[in-house]
Image (cartoon, rainbow, N blue to C red; front, side, top):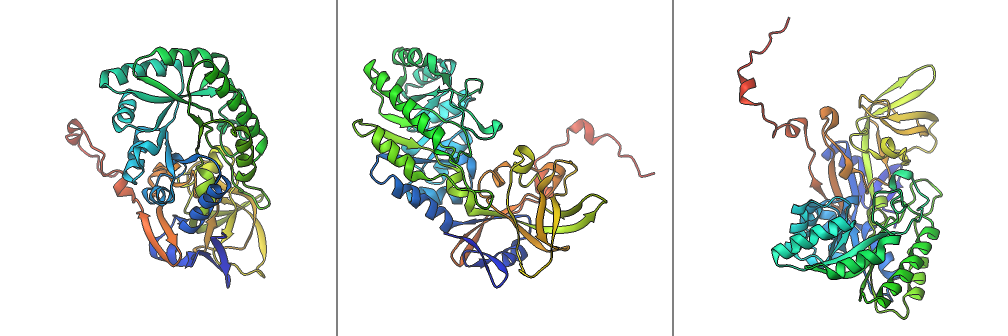
Length: 428
């Protein structure tokens, strides 16, 4: 569904005008479309309708409780990468047996939480972690259901910072050690190996890397079974990409489902797939207000009240997000501008060389595809207000996270007693 669309020159989220939301809630403001999230989830569910699959939504993409509750109601589980995300998933009503726990740096406290809750599966990243988990599980009188994350040395063909399955990356156990790792797991107390896990990276739009990974995983799974490891789960991770630029294609689940149907036709195996961005990325926009204009001999700058503290991806990855005027006259003259934020960093650029109508102070823009890795990566840098979050559902909308003002950001900070007695300096 096209959740964000123009009517008579005004940009809407479903049935709600975005300028009305900006006026009532303030900016910067993240706005999510419930209808778009439902549509994307159902498209994946339909593609995999003939396969035994559990979609474990990657909580890190957008961890808001309302988003988690919405996806849980559709049937999704949760892919978590911290103890805090496990707690979020539980708070949102996701059952423990639909939660998997991944991540290269799991603390003892987080592993104890996973054991206590009784989640579906812990994806083990190293043999050291496997042994530590065995000790923790034995001490707690529990058995940990695990899958070992195997690094297949497959290049995801995406951005270097979000590619995770090359041997030089920090993730997983090298495939050359896989059999030894599973043999060790079978001997350790408190450990029950139930699956095989791999994950290639993020923002992958081509089928090629996934096809190679699927074939690799199924060959390895068969060999592990032949060697006496009765694995039931095949966790293929996530990383499915969306269309950030006009003309780009999001990842299509239909060919992947067809390939997996062919490869698993004679296997009794349950598939775990961990979509994140693909469910929520295109379902969100970031609303920002123009603070002012600035021109130099070389550039025209449009300065917004949102910057890298609100949406980090452009500064971190040189990521592209389409920027749209919230009110649009197709006859308006257009100009090329640098769209920047208010942060004291030269890297605080949200869009370079963008063709936009000539916008003025207090005009609104919508930064698209901001539903994933937007609010969740935001910070209090420069002590600027943290953006609120709104969920729209048809004509209904609700604030699902309020704006966090500067005073709230430092309300929990404490001045030590010995500094309370230091005399304050009077102004000169």
